[in-house]
Length: 249
Ligand code: 13P
Image (cartoon, rainbow, N blue to C red; front, side, top):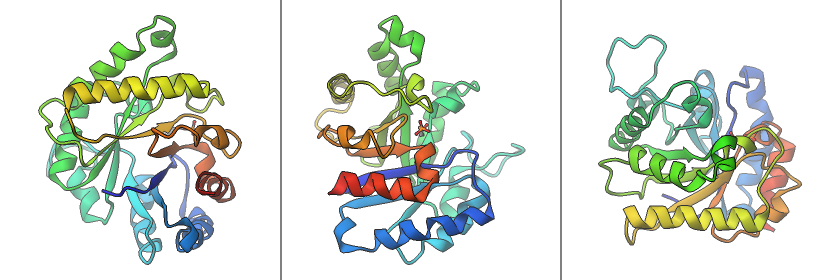
């Protein structure tokens, strides 16, 4: 996997055929020498995966899916898509364990199955972890994250294909972000949890939750971060480029 600064665009349930044109400006900057330190990954909805793979073919941009089913294909799972299907269409990444799916009943066991299938199919995994507001208020952040990591990565020995995405649930789409010093502390806590389980292996950690072109100047100061997982602001190419430019410059 790459050692560049990761800018992962999670488009969630947004985007149609018309919106594909809007990423042309991002493709253009990805080709500039100045931004070669940036690794841009688009995670559009399933319906646009193929279009994004074709559109970004001659660039360094990679494509990821936003989820996958926990069972292997083929199988009688109406409306579901497996990691091998995602791989075959040309995507290289998959988001697993997003809080918007956890809150719909996705379990740690399913997350573990998804991750193991994804790795078997040679996909890189963007593994989302993070506490809810009530966890935070009850000072359970570290125990929740520890549980998510231990159960989500059960029977997994190598983490070279995993990107840990710390996304506090209360920060997603709310404009609320931890103060830099608190976020840094939290990232170090997570690194510690990972270190205990996967000694000596280097973990990649990114942050997600209300990242925008204003707070990026603060967030980029956290040297322990390997990049960002961006929702809302990534759907607007001007804002997304601004985030990339401010981080790299
Ligand atoms: P926002 O950037 O819109 O807060 O979303 C973050 C997120 O959930 C990315 O996965």
